[in-house]
Length: 388
Image (cartoon, rainbow, N blue to C red; front, side, top):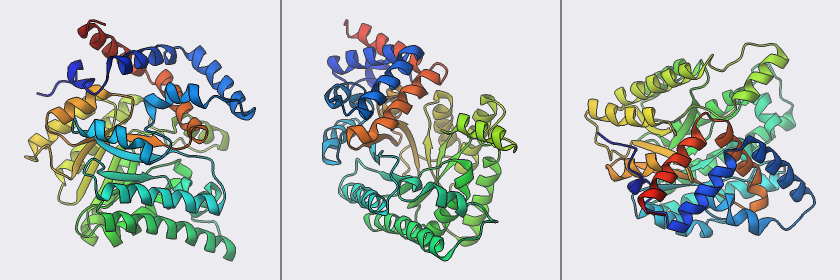
């Protein structure tokens, strides 16, 4: 049985210098107070246009990002590829609002797919619909009762055309693409458009993947409805399965607007539904392809057991695991060493524009129970093994 305790395999791509830098970074992130003060200081420095790029690039950026451009990610792509770990290039620039910026983002995403066309180390591309369209329009498109003006209809059409352009590039490059999940009040439109793209591009294999967040209590039923749609239309439904990323925001909005929270009552319920979803997908593999995005050891192990149970090879191209760059190397590298398909999300983009992503990573490592402690204990064990 696969073990996630082997730190020699987990950190085989890390030099002694890399490991020591990661150790000090996670030690800092382990302090909620330091993270809070660091966020305030960083945001202030950004507003005042202080020269912080070099300090950020040498520390937190280097841990969690591949580079400022696709070309700068080459070293990370090759290094991970040497150990059987793939790269998912993730253009992590946020907060844009103009059509010019949205078109530029779509072009960059298409370039990541073109980059993957000639590199087996890039098994997927990825994008967020909020990166290529206005949030308020997505919210209106998810509201069945909203009546669009003619101008808004044209704007929505432009967003759908950008999605189609990206999905067609994925099809032409034969590099599947994930459409990331977002807040529940804009997700209905994203689900609808993702399925429309699947009808066009997923006839032979899963090229377009929709993302399903299992911290929502309605998503297991949604997954089952996706299976029915795939069966009826004779297509392959691509699923990127995650627990979720907007929990506090979702709960706060539900309270403030007075509607029932879409979030599971507790973590155990999310874990249960995540694993039930894994089994449902693997047991219906004729119609599904899966990327299990998780830093949870139990779910990662459970997927390997399900593949064995249903007599599916670990390197079957329809099944992948995925983690974020800079985190959970003990899962990624041990899965790869045991012959399973695995990839890392590799965020990239100009430092200042990627800062919101990096600050969220710091927050997540501070708030997710045990995450930073687990990373630190593994790094310390490997430092000890290397007699450092």
